[in-house]
Length: 342
Ligand code: AHM
Ligand code: MG
Image 1: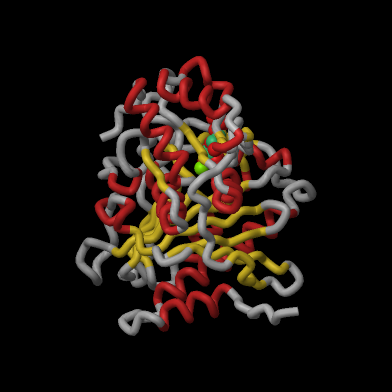
Image 2 (image 1 turned 60 degrees about the vertical axis):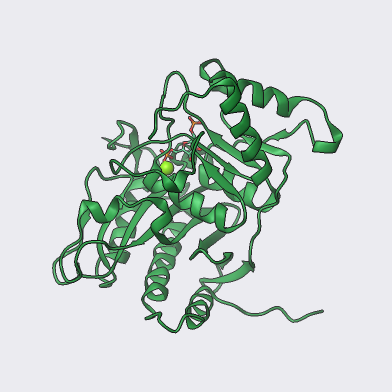
């Protein structure tokens, strides 16, 4: 049996940085801090059914949705794990309306982090996969000063790293710095993430589509025709496609990354800019999927090229295997798209 490399997440990050002589090791340190937060959230998610943690807090988040205790737990853990490390100058979370200031003396780091602490939160009570998503940028404000809103509102093309953690049948940490996408599975026995998915590439073609078909009535014609096309039989093109929709973007995109597939959260007649957030969900997932060889568009343009206007801005998203995204793009162009983004 060939010997497997025993590669932990911190070792992998360090080895990646060694290839860049100009690297200071800071990115390694902050990714390790995110991994620590992920382990803590994973533990809490795993005991969610046992602890007195389920149910609503009674509060609503910035989008007017009910917040569950685990969302807030994950949000707080991310902040506590990251705000005293000296690496960040400012943070933003899907669960908080404004930017999150870092305590003084610790707020002069050169990086900025935006995160969705617990994506797919409507699935928590049902023991269905959920996840954490993060996106890291270099600051644009002068070093040595506290970070600003402008530091957070950079287009996705400026990301220096992004990743997600899926809390599923096992806990998996996936990250990219733009060169390759790597996945690590948490070994619960010794609490370490071990390399399990080396250099992930998403297949160019696919046979899986993921979207909420319950919203069919509100879709634009382009999307209606595209989904009908996927449902037609054509052996050579792997059709009809299989429908797979978990309702946790992080888990749906993770599966599609491994098996090939397209995930869609469109603009529709009820939600003209879609549901998902550009800064917390779409940009980081787009960075990862593109680094794996796929594509991510909002209908007529690349997700990562959208100039952000606000922290909680929503955008439609079509993300996954290259050929499938090319095809849906053609349908939207030809038959119409509801898309009011810039
Ligand atoms: P959340 O951040 O509040 O969990 O919402 C985002 C989630 C995505 O993970 C998921 O794909 C989508 O919302 C599901 O929405 P819907 O129930 O409308 O299909
Ligand atoms: Mg989310």
